[in-house]
Length: 65
Image (cartoon, rainbow, N blue to C red):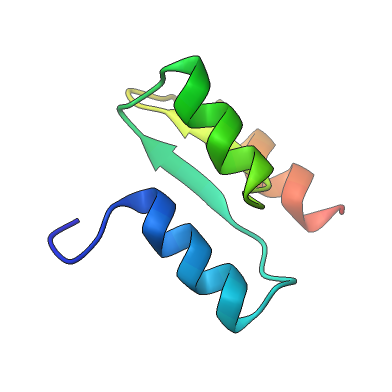
């Protein structure tokens, strides 16, 4: 993203509306990055490249929480 990275965006969204449902999508699938995102409030994390079934699963998970 040109303005900020995903972690910064996650923090901004959560500070604005803490109950936002967020699914992170990134090519950066390092375990520490995923753990940081989940710890900061992401509801799920999808690593690129991904398939449509994984996206559907993440959306269903978030809608059911």
